[in-house]
Image 1 (cartoon, one colour):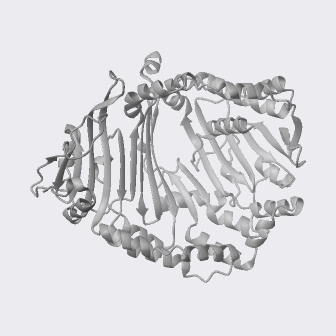
Image 2: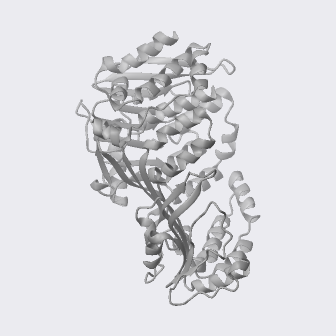
Image 3: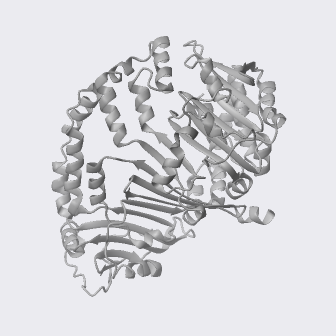
Length: 582
């Protein structure tokens, strides 16, 4: 059953993963879909401006994913009709994923699609355009026929829907998957004893909430505050989550959780949170960290063609806590420029050690400053007091002046002709940036005996460490050590040397906290033969999919005036033979 649930989650994520946001668009009835989204939804994500789904699928669809034999047997052996129904849908997903045409046909998805997802209390709602009603229902008709699991026909207002009831025999509880079609749009939601018929009517657009996203202007406010393009916005509202947990009727989420507490006597944990003290204190925390928002800042940040899918997005954890944000900004260090260029693999950590201890102390004191009366928060404070950062501050004192550490691998070659693979070529660099890197090198000499007698030239000349470092025979490379301005570098190969030399005149300014990048194709191509040699035949066959994975990913973590920001880029291309066939 565990595998079935995992596969089901994959299917749902794959079907819903294209949903972003554009608030100006309207549906076929001339009314903005945002008029039916409650303003107290805890999350929102949508794409209400046509998204080139067909091109996206062509650029990101690789070799057909293979289901394991165990999973296939689990689908076939299910004695429960509801499990067979879910298994039929999951199998349909894997079969459809063989090609973009079959995927669109199976799920009745148009070439250009709009869609959105949000919540009505505890009820998730997913809405998206489909090609036609018959095509949408065909998938579920087939699953019913294969499983013997039947739906219940129902209506909410004037909207007809199908309800598939899933029950747990042990607890006696049940929940219904609700599916509906209207005006070229499909709607998925869940119906249970925790919501009222009026909530289902809101989810099926038969009743508009008194306060909606459209009337509240939430999306326009996010776009203005963060400089996001309006066609790509999503958010998670921490304040609505806290209201739902700490109040009995402050929003739809709170009301449904209260019903769960009354009906199942399962809300005892909520009793600790639903006190005036917790409501006030958790509310203050949520006001300091109100939302997590995501979007793009330039139209060029999303480029979708059959030959390439490129997305550059930013996610910001909003913060109004000046003490914490000032501390995080002050400890932000230096990420070397070479990590912003194409790397086979790269990682950088930017920490200003001159400010690290004061910043850590400021954050620690901020967590202890309020005299919390709410029991869970008091317990949290007790745990924080027991982890005094003074010991860590003493350790970091040895690294005073450090600004950041970087590792970049541009290329490598493996020789597979012998009994064991040997790395015969490596292009890469490791850099340590500091106010005075020579001080850090002198400290390192005390811990690495091989470096104790080494005199590092101040003019930037490199020293060959091949005879000094105990490299294993599998690494046939020439490591070079040099001092380049305010950067201590260890490099190998011409590309590594070029990256090292470029640092010679660069000042290690504060520009980030963390950087990570990887080129999957360049990294996996030389490694897969090694992995396949040691893998089981079934695993080796599945690894064939990775050979076609032409994807580059880069992630940056830092701060901005609005909060903590994570910037990510993904560049995906289809396999060469697939592009030629198109």
